[in-house]
Image (cartoon, rainbow, N blue to C red; front, side, top):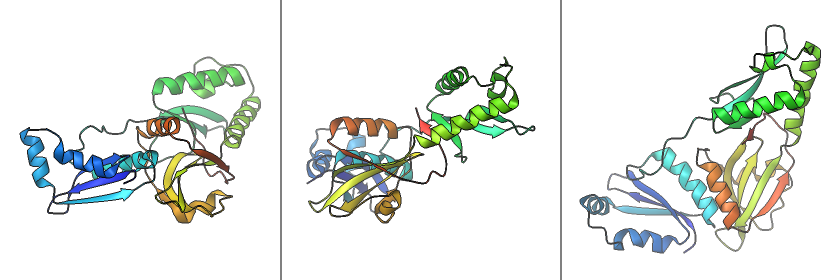
Length: 254
């Protein structure tokens, strides 16, 4: 059997454990044949009343789906996964004088950031480099020393930066093996990063981002997503396709 995600349920229909595998049948069987004599392991096996699985075509799609599902249901036996880490964004905003300013903040519900980072230190380093490279006014970017530029000069440079950050972003598909010979799997990323997975018929023509919407299953990102994507790209032979899209909001992940 191919790659996929499997679910162990108890008699009440509650999910006990979610896992992924490149060979579903052998991996599920290993839970019951492995030589684990601990009381916890024995109790876990006794509680399993039903098994469900979803085929994914390849281990990358399986890994992304598993990560999403664990954080959706938080099964009691998935203890290895940690809570998502906070990320930081560099945001552009206008001050009381209507001048553009750049600042760093934690990413919450807001999405209008120029770039996002896994740590505050990386965000500060990137912003400091941008201020120096673009000759921005440090006072308007959270740094104490001013450059002497006029507000108009500074504003024009920030607007040029934002336009450039938008222009280098596009929607992208990674195409891989599907669940059957008649389809292909895809991983979809847009200007906000990873968005979801899906499966399309092999004869389906995909020319724009909106063409995949009927096939797209949107998944949540986590602190693990970038690592899963990098590992999948390294291990699998994937085809990369760039798609035109209308940028609604910015954000590069570093």
